[in-house]
Amino acid sequence: MIAFSLAILIGSLLKAAGLKDIAIAMQPLGLVFVNAIKMLMVPIIFTTIISGVTSLADSQKLGRMGIKTFGFYMLTTAFAVFIGLLIGGLISPGVGISLPDAASGGAGAPDPDAAMSIRDLLVGLVPANPIASMAEGNVLQIIVFALLIGLSINLAGKKGAIVRQFFDSATEVVFKLVHIIMALAPFGIFALIIWVIGALPVNELFSLIWIVVALYLACLTQIILVYGGLLTLVARLAPLKFFRGIIDAQAVAFSTATSAGTLPVTMSNVEDNLGVSKKITSFVLPLGATMNMDGTAIYMGIAAMFTAQAIGIDLTGAQYATIIITGTLASIGAASIPSAGLILMPVVLGSVGLPLGAIILFFPIDRLMDMMRTLTNVTGDATIAVLVAKSENELDEASYNADPIE
Ligand code: ASP
Image (cartoon, rainbow, N blue to C red):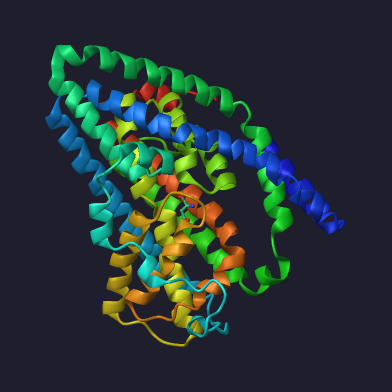
């Protein structure tokens, strides 16, 4: 938090003094940190899911946990799109803004056909070549492969014991590496935030400031009302303890804008500070990082409202319902990397016949919004890990209520 605040201060001073280039020159330092946490992503998903599944040899429990996790994901995401639509309607960021014409070949106009369909999403779940999935960092495919290997180790019984022990020990080693890299987090965050401030286009920001405000407000509403509400009312836990425990993960998510990259930090925060068992984190969090993106879903709702306002039309009830469904699906389909939400936005706009040109306006300010979306995505995953842990008796409430370790 100190590094973060200092970076905002120094970045703004550099910019005000016309030394923007120095701020931008911090990017490579930040990227070293981003690379280091991305490096952990594949090993952590692969090893923790396998040791998670082998520690949960009871397949009935696994199935029950899966249903609960998925149910919570859907519920919070549908809420998120709704909040996005609501706040987008209240703040009306698109009124008085004219849209560039994407059809006439505006730069960066997306190809809606390139977006992922539900069919592609399902077929793509099973990796034809798991090594390629790891090389490409295809998280969903790695999860499926790891789940199947874990189940097979369980089925192999005694003969699989050596492989099981290997993955248990590998998980421990990978977590040691997470702790080493996390010690560098303040430096990485410092460099990234200075760079973001230096590279921010001031002019574009002014005309579109309201959409940024709407997104931040909607994300805060989701975090405080939906997550805080679920923790208090459903899990009967103190929400402030929760937010204190995951502040590292939130800071990393905000500065890197990738929830897959943040995953190692999220896992270590949720286990060490919130007392959620490894069984739960190793299952709920990797899945959440790829499928549960409430910040991204909020963005879809706001983008749709913005576009409708800019062209001066009122959406119908059926269109709102379509946006909630396609917004939820697009957030599931979006990869957990920077700007993934921006790339999938045309799916939602296209589903209700809104012009795709709006996306061009979002390009220069996407990073700023991506940071908040990713913070929200990661907070949502952590919330659901706690809820599932509580309902499965896998939450150590003493350590949830204790002061954070890191
Ligand atoms: N950057 C976001 C994430 O990694 C996805 C998005 O672009 O909305 O969670």
